[in-house]
Length: 434
Ligand code: UDX
Image 1: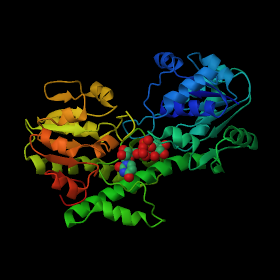
Image 2: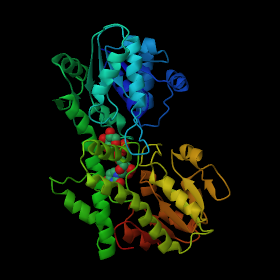
Image 3: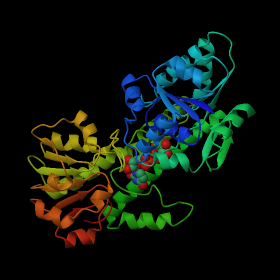
Image 4: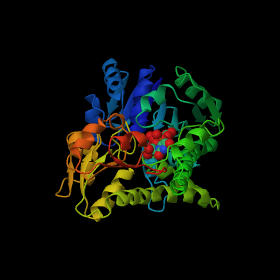
């Protein structure tokens, strides 16, 4: 099938590459010409395990093509996916101007029937707005339809999630749209949930908000465990063995970040408010998440007393492992808080340092290390903010021998407390006694 993707961020690039790989003829368009030049050259602007190989492969076979011509892009696809960004506005609502621009672009260049599919996470009723925008901007009467097909991919596992999703949700108005989307996803073996459009839009927001709620819930239990003298990891493990609860997304730590959860929780709260619904739970979810940084700072100060002129190493900057994405990463706030208190930082992350350098360039208080061991040399504490495997498997004896004082403050609970203490460290995990 002929497919066009508008908006080549995480979702757009993965969808374009995945659809090409399962045999469709895909054309990707983005307003950013530099991005298109890089992509044509096989260079992905995002770090995603497995993506580069698939991108190159499908560029070579010609199944995947990138263009900066709106007309070429729109005329190509029988199905057009809108994958543009939906960032938060100051009031927490979703800024849908990029989605609107995409709809106008389609209306301007539409040449025959198109199924326009929203893939970006959007508030309920966005499809109606897309349809209205299209109608207002059509140059001549041409048939089209709008559908919803929310994307559930996780960064760092995006390729796997594309080929092996837990479910594919399609929200449609007609059998014709349903047939087209069924045909599109035929090679992918996953349960297909067919709903009306409003329902599909809510499924996405509700799924993300629920997962974020699970994380904030366990983080509150984490604080309780710390105060009462219990172990949150064991609590989560036993809770998760109950199939009704499930073991995933019960990892306590410094809270959720990324481009989705913080934005979607706020946006869903805002959607409720528009209908007169006070979804208080979501306010608490956000507040608990924000307070995780306070808990971590409390641990750091318990370990170091004053932070002024203390030399601290940070391992992990990305909002989670296997990605270079630092959007809404807890590390950004932690770095600020330590710098505000005149602490001195050396940062290390296997792939995200280039992104952090844009927010915090090197200066006399803040350095970037070339390797993880170099980063801890002569430091008074090591702070762990992302649970990368290389940190889990670190040579801790080497770490201890390099550090000035052997203190680990672990925001992700990646080590066994007994083992690290035996190696001579003071260890401050989350939600258990240190
Ligand atoms: C999320 C959703 O999982 C995905 O379905 C949606 O399409 C986009 O948003 P993503 O943001 O890539 O995906 O990351 P995810 O793996 O869900 O983690 C989100 C955040 O929650 C991370 O900061 C992670 O560290 C944190 N997290 C996750 C926890 O703190 N504890 C957990 O148990 C799980």
